[in-house]
Image (cartoon, rainbow, N blue to C red; front, side, top):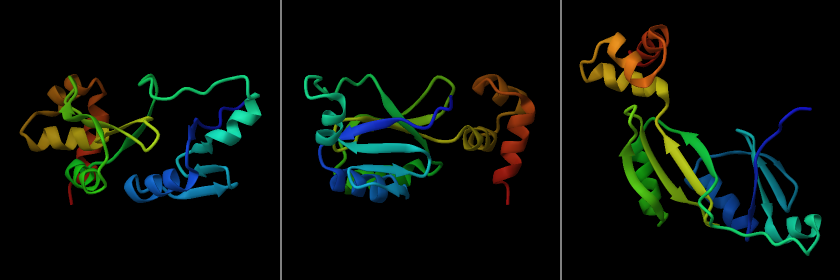
Length: 157
């Protein structure tokens, strides 16, 4: 058995596809009409169609805040500007996790929770830029010093 991807149901496939392409900068891998798979391997499925596959006696409920799709982006300020420009409703504003990673959570058009955090590589680089030593950064983010060193080198021109 091989795991393929998460699938979320959406009320309007075109609206959601537009959201994931324009706001989330995702590209379509497969388009089956009522089911669209994006590179990064997650899919959106038209709720009304999915309902028939389950059998109409099974109700699909939304908005439980018990599941999220997670993405990474290093330029969090650019993301926040894009979210604001598109009127996206936030779960919470940009915040720093205990391990110092910057994240924001918000809702897609169907109230599915989306989290975007800076990559751990960028986090290591950012902390290094704040004057922290490699061993301290490794301790903060819980990753080996070799990871931190490689991450810092990745972002230095």
